[in-house]
Length: 435
Image (cartoon, rainbow, N blue to C red):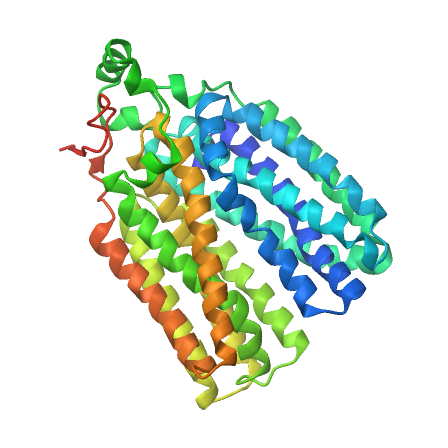
């Protein structure tokens, strides 16, 4: 029997290894750079600006990302982005005082801009490397390496900054990007989505019919734009889930520290412990879903994980009425990492299954756009905790948003049997049902 895990595919293993290496490097910088900014400014506002700057490129550059990914080989886009990220780190070598902060902010913007290309290119490439039956496994394993990178790179970033300086972090991160680029360059050649009429979606229909459609109707092979992707009816449920859950995530970024230092009466060390321990549950979920689980429905996985996310959040926010001992919260935060990985694996699999190859570049660029807008809205809502609304009602609302996302997923995401088949222009939103 053929293995149902994506790790059995050599090309996927190389992509996974490249992601693990670059994600570890990312977390080196993600931990170290905000610390450096805070050390130079002594201001939480300066650190907040660093985080907010990461959201801007996903909104501004999404149309460009959709166009580039739709027209060029995703493999070489990713290689070029990795090399660009390595080079973009170099200005940090000259960040030594407050007057140098514009350089640090510029690096953050450039890196976030390049990630706007890298992530949708990777998600678009994935269905060309694995068959539809292994998409959930592949997306779960991608989530696994992101969290392994967090577990390895987070503490290592703090250690390297303590024993050296920012230059050491820059060198380690740049090397990780170069190694990642080399691994990605060895992946099999894949045609640009504009000319790719096969891929995973052919498994849901007829590859011959797809080829005939493309040859008789050139418009059927034209890559769609960002707005077209957002208007695809069968994907609207997924975009709605991403928007609502991203608002909840944005609220969490603001409210978590206030909760840990306020109702929980924790210390700075407790804040770090609770944020870091989330990766444990995420790694366990990634291993189970990536290597063990069989025949999982992306729709069911997404809905179940969102309900679990909401329930765990509401228990956590209300538990200080019972106890403020830190260990129950360690268990809860470790557990909440699992539905995070499962939700992303399920959603990405839905989007990959339900989009045609020519649509995927725009679809995953739209994912970044919708996610960034949602997080920005959540951050703004989180700021209301300083006013009359207060902290606890906003925390309750944050948990309920995850439950709402679960309802949307259960009612609006297409089932596994509903697959997209390439159609002529004007009929791209039809859904075919396979027996």
